Amino acid sequence: MANVLVNAPKTAKRGAIVEIKALILHPMETGFRPGTNGQIIPRNIVERFTATWNDAEIFSMDMSPAISANPFVSFFAVAAESGTIRLRWTGDQGFAVEEQVAIAVE
Amino acid sequence: MTALRFGIGLAVVFAASLTLAQVGGDKGGVDKRRSGTQDMGEALQRMQDDDTANPGMLFVQLGSQLWTKKAGAADKSCADCHGAAAASMKGVAARYPAIPKGADTPVDLEGRINLCRTENQKAERLPSENRELLALLAYVAHQSRGMPIAPPADPRLGTFRDQGAEIYRRRQGQLNLSCAICHDDNAGKKLAGVTIPEAHPTGYPIYRLEWQGLGSLKRRLRNCLVGIRAEAYAYDAPEYVMLELFLMDRAKGMTLESPGVRP
Image (cartoon, rainbow over all chains, first blue to last red; front, side, top):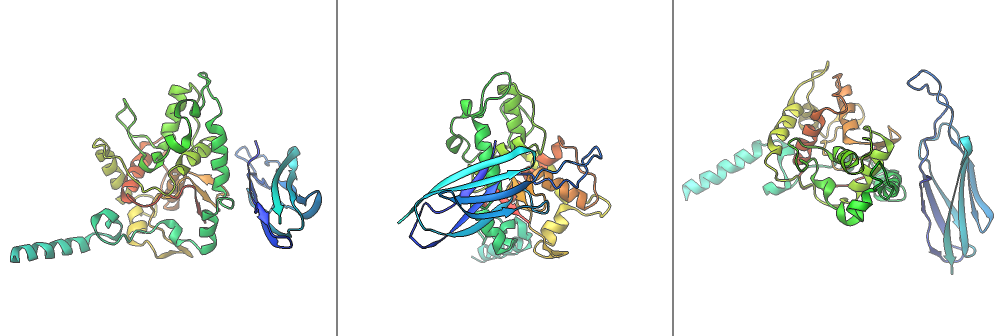
């Protein structure tokens, strides 16, 4: 069960700069911490976040173990055409989540 | 006339001698109580107010999914009995802890959810600070956001509340401090770099950045107990419910902000 909160405008004027904010529920376990049994808890982080606008990549970032749990990402894009913004998180232990939002550009 | 004036004068002196925290909104004066939110920086306040930036809302979302998920031998979900939470759970978090039907000791919201699980869903209790339990807590508490804290008028709660007040004012731990010493006498001053809040339970369960996760009032109370080098009560101890009863009464009328964000 993946839990994601995305905040992007539903409409924008052509050429306007829009802010897209995304929050995801993820432990971001560093891989450096011992658990209660003394064994190291295996690393479990989101490794990469990418955003595409009508399949053209507009933003991407690599995440590291130093990033907090439930990472919040905010970035800007120029509204060029109506379509779909797709956000994708991939990471350790086969983690892959995709969320999409529609945006109408006038 | 003179007697009346004397009476008013006496009342004013009496009112002035009350501590800051006891000046409630319903006592006629200006409400000087401050929620922890007001002591946070602007960035954190905006984080709490923005439903897509407040990480507590992830748990509210998770809770809404659990609300309709069947559990236990009875194969029932919360929604099967309670319907839509927006209607049935509105105001519930603002009035708990309360005494459930047929019982004689109060339970907090967490205890109420577990009662529902064991009695109606025939499912196992969820342990304290379990993610699913916190998510359900957050979802239920969220339905009361913006409502004033309204403890029930049940007279049976009185003795428990008084016991809570007694714990609140009792010195304990190696540092020999009571809750009241920090949160009544020195609230608003600094402990290291941090402003000491007045300890009103307005935003629970809270997303605490230090925890990188959601936590209940119980976790916060345990945190304070460890801070004064006292031994924290067991997770199922009645002391937490008593303290919560007292704190909710102390914060009566203040606005519920769940899920809150705290540093």
